[in-house]
Length: 245
Image (cartoon, rainbow, N blue to C red):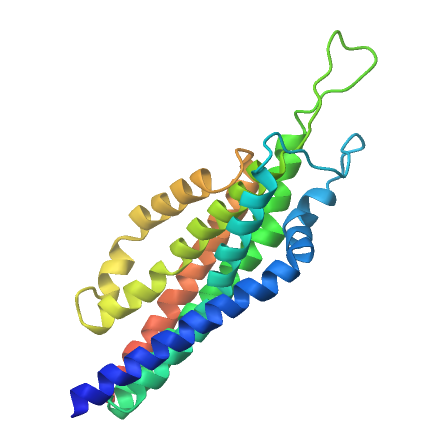
């Protein structure tokens, strides 16, 4: 009977999630212009005198595909906290008290890195990246030829969404490490001994997922480094707490 009720609850919660996702898609579609404005705002704020506040498209179905892609993907991002909440409610009654507290720590940590990755991308990575690439625009009456920038709406939004996906995925890695340490697959001493290797990995991540200019790469690198040190400190506190359980 317990298995039957558990499967029934899973079915209903899955239906709740599907219904919420469809509702998010409908709402976002009605506010698609506002949603696109949020994505293009970092580009509109560029300090480029010659940048015109318009976008182009070259295919007759480009705008429809952009709308559909943006609505489906952003609805999924908005649904993430709701999915986490349903998982917590489903597991709550089947866990011991210390396991439930551990689950709450994971949820808080995951949501923190989720919001932090969005903040990092929107307010730091995107503005620095676009300023760097726009700097290649070369327009002058004294030049033999001029280089104009005209932004294509689908390329711009697809690039933003792909970078956002990878940044969110990378920032969820500490949650996985936290779980591995809880089950003693990894230990804190390993993280301390492997700091040099991890710093090199952070440098590679900053190089791959930020603009080619050295300033934005250093900003991303030091942000990852600070987050890593904070994460180590949290693990030390958690390890002390766990020793008393």
